[in-house]
Length: 274
Image (cartoon, rainbow, N blue to C red; front, side, top):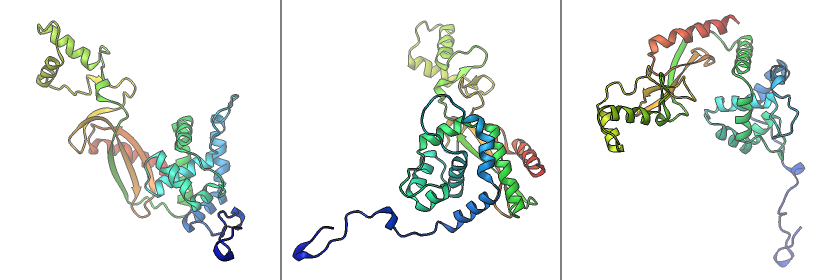
C-alpha cells in the first residue's frame, strides 16, 4: 500500500481477482446455458466432433466443440458476421466469458483458432448440430412452423474476377483475349488492345463459359451496387412467429428467387420432419 502526501493512504494499483465483485452473467445467456446443460449439449457436440480432434502431433490448442458452437451462437444473437468480431466480443465481455465457461483471467479463443476449427469440422456435422438445435427449440415451444419467411442475400465470393478460367479450355481471361486478338490479326496485342476487344465482345460474363478454379460454385453476377463480382446467394427460412431460423441453403447467385425458393422450402420440410 503506497503512502500519499501528508501520510494519506492511496488506493492500491492492482486488485486480486478474488476480490473483484461477483455479478451474475447476462440473464439471456444464463438461460441459454441452462437449456444447453439440461439437454446435454456439450456431450452431444463432443460425440459428433470427436473424429476431428484426433491428432498425433502437437499444435495450436483447440477449442472444445461446445465452446466453438457457443461462439457461433454469440455471432448469431448479436449480429456479428465475422470471426474476428466474434472473438473480440467474447474476449471483451465478462458475461460472454461466463457463457463460454472461461474464468475472468482466462483468454478466450482468438479469431484464427475459430477459423481453424470451422475448417476442421465438416459441413455435415455443422448441419447435424443445427438440426439438434431446432429439435430443442421445438421441444421448448419456440418453433411454430405455420408461417415461414424466406429471404435471400447475395454474398461476394472470396474469389477474384481476374482469376476466372474458360470451362472448356482452362485458359485464363487474359490468355483468351490474347488469342482472340492474334486471331483478328494483332500479333502482339497491348493491354489497350485487349481492353478494346473485350468491350466489344457480347456475353463476356457468361457463367456457361467461365468459372473460378478454386470456387466453381461462385457465379458471375451484378451486385446491388452495380458492380460485377463472383458471388453466392444464401437463403434463410425463418419461423415468422418466433424468429427461429429453420433452414439455410446456398444457391447460385445468378438464379432467380422464384427458382431457388423451392429448394429452401424443401429444406424446411426436411428439418421439420427430422
